[in-house]
Length: 106
Ligand SMILES: [Zn+2]
Image (cartoon, rainbow, N blue to C red; front, side, top):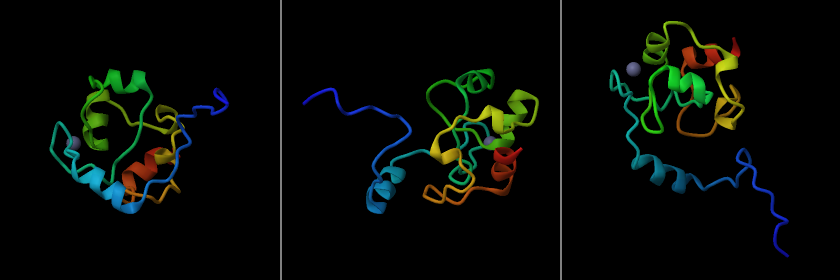
């Protein structure tokens, strides 16, 4: 029977660790401004906030460069509800940085 599977962007099957690592190896994790590796600052912002930072569909920003571009600190309300934004989310890419955790809890 078709049409019974609901597509939910926020629920997905857990990929294997090997699959995750293979995927990550193909990515450029450098912040577009300072080239810092952003694996410990991997987050998903609301579209309008990301656009306000001058960003499009591609590229990553560390929290420091994001906030410099916005001219303010980000807080919980700027982030979407995806699992990677959960401070307790412990899967890769990496444990979250202290400043990302701080912003996610504000
Ligand atoms: Zn940066």
